[in-house]
Amino acid sequence: MDVIVLLRELLLWLILYYGLRRLTVRLLPRKNPNPPPLPPGPRGFPVVGALPLLGRAPHVALARMAQRHGPVMHLKLGQHGVVVASSPDAARVFLKTLDAHFANRPSTRPRRASPTARRTSCSRSTAPGGSCCRGRPVEVAEMLSYAMANMIGQVILSRRVFEAVGAESSEFKDMMVELMTLAGLPNVGDYVPAVAWMDLQGIERRMKELHRRVDVVLSRVMREHEATAAERKGRPDLLDQVVASRDSLEGEKLSDIHFKALLLNLLSAGTDTSSSTIEWAIAEMLLNPAILKQAHAEMDRVIGRTRRLEESDIPNLPYLRAICKEAFRKHPSTPLNLPASAPMPARSTATTSRRTPGS
Image 1 (cartoon, rainbow, N blue to C red):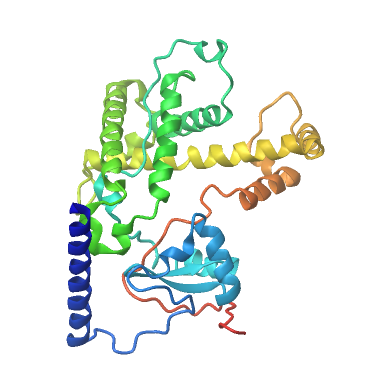
Image 2 (tube, rainbow, N blue to C red; image 1 turned 90 degrees about the vertical axis):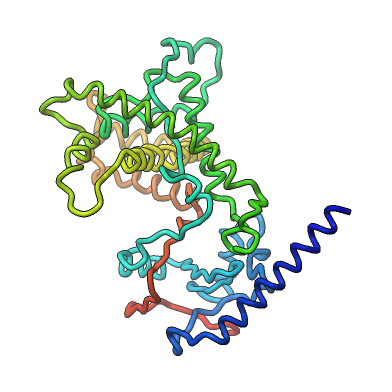
């Protein structure tokens, strides 16, 4: 009975909210009486818009819609309009030609719940050396995340993030998975603001819990980095240079929250995404031994067995580059790119091929 009363009150609030909103829109003068025309797209449903059309695999559903409406589509997701670019030419316009105009990110409730960052990292591992090899199966994804985090850590912190694969590296991988899961979930409150306060899916609550764990780890990393500043005298790392510029910047001063956000973005953006793509590339080559054999032959011919791969070698490895591009194409770490927003409507002089409905 209580549930029925709650649903009835919720329905009444929704009707009142959207009724007042529609009345306000009609009475108030429009800022732009002649807005630019929107791209074609599906009509959607009342209140929720095209959200039900996305299903469990939004990137697949959007690809099917693009076949009907064209490479540039407009969708109404709840109360927010979204433009989807699904072809190389259209993506190039938004990400390259108009990249400065669309450099912002939309403000979502999970992002606001985590003021420091939206992802997580891990501090130095205290697991005893060799513990990962004592009868424990080799977790390729964990090993790759461990390696990528240490490579990035050497650049920004002058040290390895993990000393050995163990409990903390496993926790790091788990937190990356949790982060990607939360970041990829469509939050109803972002599209229907009237119910945002209810946090129906619990995404905001889970993001706040994740942020608390992240903040503890990042605070520890910052303290350890500050304690070893004398060891890096004369050879500062990236974080040292950013901290040194704290007082030389005009306007807004950088705080510890800014430094934590920088660490978080650099450590997380290059770990799970890179390790996932590498893992898929390895799996594909194991399923195709002939491709793996040819890649080995090219590496032996160009690099040999006596030195390491260097960046200058990459132009001389066309087959390996083709494998990487095919892995990106077939197994993208983020099938839907992060959303971008613009402070005002943008008009592009670049042309993109567009089919109108019914053509």
